[in-house]
Every structure is written in C-alpha cells, then in structure tokens.
Image (cartoon, rainbow, N blue to C red; front, side, top):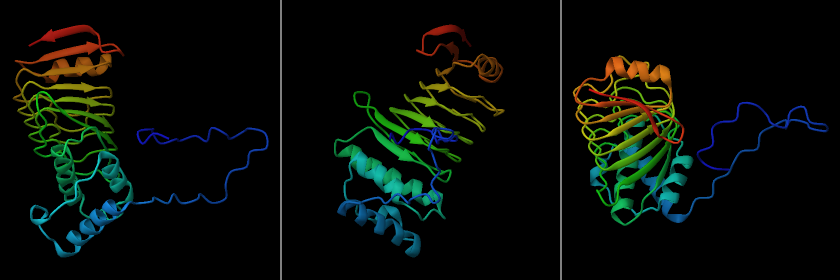
Length: 239
C-alpha cells in the first residue's frame, strides 16, 4: 500500500458473504535498519537532554529511511523539535545526492521545512502526508512540495522559486512575502489572508469557489488561475 494513500473510512469488504470483521486489529511492526535505529535513539535523547540539534552529528539516511523514521517516531510532545530534526535529516540526505522525500506528519508538525533549499537544476522534492501546523516551509527556495493535508498559518512564507500543491484546505495565511512561486490549492480557502505582499506568484485552483475567493484575496503583482484536472488554464486574472 502506498504511504500516500488516504485513510480508509469504510471497510470495503463489509457486506460480502462470509466476511467477518477482525476482533482485534493486529499491530503493524516496523522493522528498522541499524541507521534508522541510531537516528531514532538520538532523537529520543535530544528530547530528554534538550541537546541543540545543530550540535549533533547525523548519519546520512536515504529518503526511504527517513520515511521509516517518521513511521517509527512515537515521541511527539515537541512537534517543533521533530520538524527541526527532520529538516536536518532532509538537508544531510539531499546534500549527499538524494531527493524525493516522503514525510508522514501525524501530529500537525510546526516549523517543518524551514530554510530548505534545492537548486534551479535540482529542486528539492518533498511529499507530506498529513496536516502541517504554523510556519511550515518558511524561507524555502527551489522546492516542489505536495501536501496531502491542511496547512495552517504562514505556510510557504517568504518562499522563492517554489511550487506547492495542496490537496487540503487552507485555514491560515499562505504565501506571505513569497516571490516567483506557485500555489495550487485543491480544497477551500478559509483563511482571510492569501499571498499578502507576495510578488510575481501564481495562485491556482481547480475549484471555482476557491478561484473566486482567491480573486478577492490576492493582490498585485500576482496571477490567479482556474485550472482543470490536468492543470490546463481555463481562466486567469493578472493583477
């Protein structure tokens, strides 16, 4: 099963002849390799000892190992520390030549993606499965992000040359002071602030109601687009 599959709300086998629901759901046991185990113990230690993340030495993990770390992490009392820890894992892995990361956000991580930077020839690709709390992907550059969830306030603030695809609803400010970036929003815009002080950005949606809301909120010099499912532009307003 893909890590990006949405949570199944309805049992697809219910009602079939001979089907009986399980009395107890079996726990999924995650087999961790040695490098992930070491990183997991290091993360647990920084929560106990409050060691600055910048002072730590990190093994370089592959994108698959970082996804494994996300699934295995159970200590989430400090979602900001988890975000900063993951940011460091991603940076070290990207600098070693890896890309296309999958992050599982179970508890509305905040400050995730701060200062992450790819390059014009090798953008940093990240897929996030889950909601993100305040101030995620602030100061990101040359990143391409897919979010299967809802972002809260200050998402993508001061981003440059980034592309965001948001499958959920935008409930807080987005794109503040960003430049040359694209925000594709599939859900609704509930926020009262969208793209404030942004420049030369494109705000896209496949939802006609969201499109009208974007026109109300986004100011010049930016572009608002209504697109179809294969991302062809149906209608656009250049402000």
